[in-house]
Amino acid sequence: MALFTDADVVTLDDLLQFETSLVQVASTHGINVDTKINLAVSGISDRVLLWLLRMGASDPQWMRRRVVGLSTVVVTPPVSKWIGFDALSRFYAEAYNVQLNTRFQGKWMEYQQLATEASQMAFDSGVGIVYTPLPKPAMPLVSIQNGSGPAQSMYVQTSWVDIRGDEGALSRVNGSILPDQSSIAVGMTEGLLGAPTGAIGWNVYLSTTAADLTKQNDQPLTIGATWQMPSSGLIQGVFPVGGQQPDYQIQLSRLLQRG
Image 1 (tube, rainbow, N blue to C red):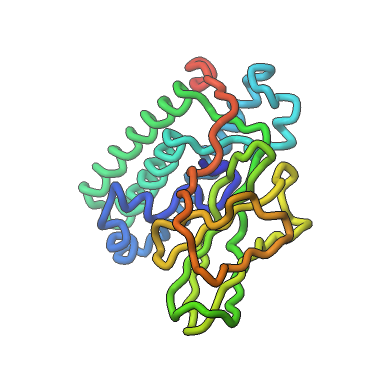
Image 2 (image 1 turned 45 degrees about the vertical axis):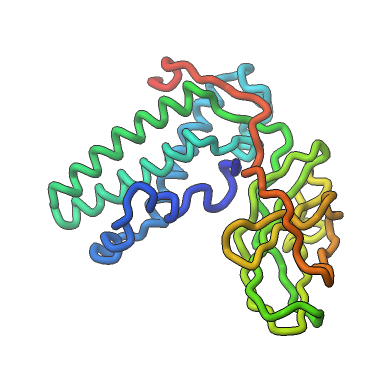
């Protein structure tokens, strides 16, 4: 799972699962979908942080919460739905205000109700906390070099790893077209000094298609090191785990939520 402070915790592709015509409506009415997502993330972040501050010692990080903010809070599936439904509610609210179309008003109200239900589920299931946050890395650095590989597309993602072997969320995909007789080297944009405090290494995922990237290293790569594709090519490694799992769940009372 991604952290609240990661970029792209919810994307347009996530919203398209619920509204396939979203891009067409956005283009017709001049609505920026990313702006609505960012507003939803910002608004929900403020609410979650406020509730955590009210929890006091029930939050294992309560003494540092004002300093760390939401950097140790994971975006669980219910929270992801909450953000997505809130963004769609904001989107259709603007669409209705632009055109006063009752169909858009209906969708606005529908997603507003779904957002409310998702927020309740998020707090009933608990707000997830990690003790060693591993932020999503920046897009990896890719270098095309001379080698023995054929001409092909290559897609790359990376992730940070902590001492327990836990893995953070994957970076954005860096795609390249390799010419014939070439190879590829991958490094972390953050380098040696920009790695998160809890990271002891990193993983690299590659594929010749935009989907199904698999891990290419058996052991975490050293921070600051560069991964070089072997002459034998890619291996069929394991798939990513989907980011960090919570170390601790904080359940917030309904009283706190209403307050």
